[in-house]
Length: 105
Length: 231
Image 1 (tube, rainbow over the protein chains, first blue to last red):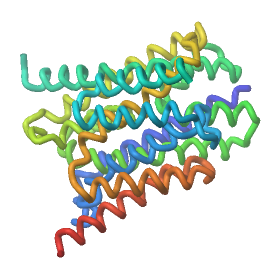
Image 2: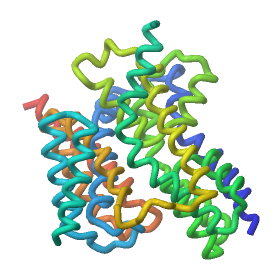
Image 3: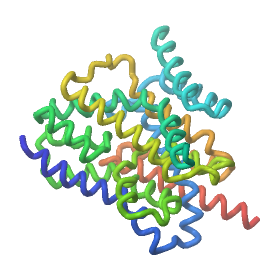
């Protein structure tokens, strides 16, 4: 079962290159104007694309609805994040609502 | 206290509440390697070398299923494709840093460090913060927490009861960071498009749905902004 060393090496080097890519070459080049304007939408787009499946689908990646508790807890967290702009309060309220709903449902 | 040390501490402080989502993740990543047949030290090393939890869980599963080496590596790297976008997004803020520091920053790049830093740089007073040390403060905090907990996970197993569902703290982290950063109509449209496409594209293999959602969101945001500025 020593396949893990080639996997670790290839994944380590490959993932590092994906991370390094633009940070490395940015000094020697500038993005075209259109790309610069697209960069602004990376946080909202990538993070939302991570959030929605993580909230709605099963914990181990199977495509099954994970339950209303998670959805409601996430919606509460969205409102709290919007009103308070506080990371800790947002996470605490989301987890709190989730546990509360799991206890009563 | 120097300006850069202040920024570093501020980054580390901002990263502290999100560690609740990192702890169970690190425990699982440390434990799953041992479950796949690695000795404890190898599972810990595996996490330190790759340092990308979601892809580690998937490649461990593929190794357990005896998939071919090429399939394992390509699947894992596809899951980490989003790092290209984070790299492009952060690159303008790290211009002119020495090469070694850039390499260190790249190795430490995670969803969490990216999300916290880009949100901080985008605030009204974002230009006043010393950007590289702030990023290092967030990234190093996440790194230390993840790798510390992989050690615990490798030796003790994932000892947090799964019914606590602490993994749910990870999407909550992103909600906490991204919602306040969405301030205008193009960003709202971008987020909606990204979420809807990512959900519809879940059946796609190798987490391609994530990239499909991300690209759709960026395209919609860009087009919406162009329409606004023209008309």
